[in-house]
View 1 (cartoon, rainbow, N blue to C red):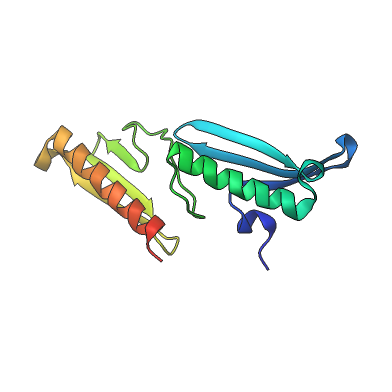
View 2: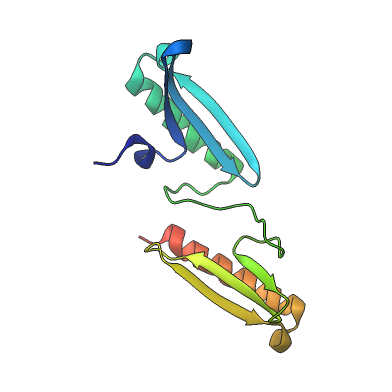
Length: 141
């Protein structure tokens, strides 16, 4: 059986006896911003009702900020030198490396030659490839 964290993405159960805090904590991350809210059992009429309120708020918040509704993880921040998630400039080999996670959870990887396409065009191709692969993973059954 799946645990609660697996069933409801971005929603965590808080049962903190010392502070008498019981409820569901929702944290939606997108484009470098975090939207969060606690749904107290007491304020919402019990554990099940507060969970339903938390799910409704999460879904409405994702819709409002433009985040696609999916239970799969979405990475929206880049720490790599190209500034795009899953795209990395390899200056030593003169290419952009593109990586992604497949629908089945495996890692995929390809590269685009700067020598062949030029730096700007190679970056554009790499970004398009990354977006294509991410959409395949997120929106295919």
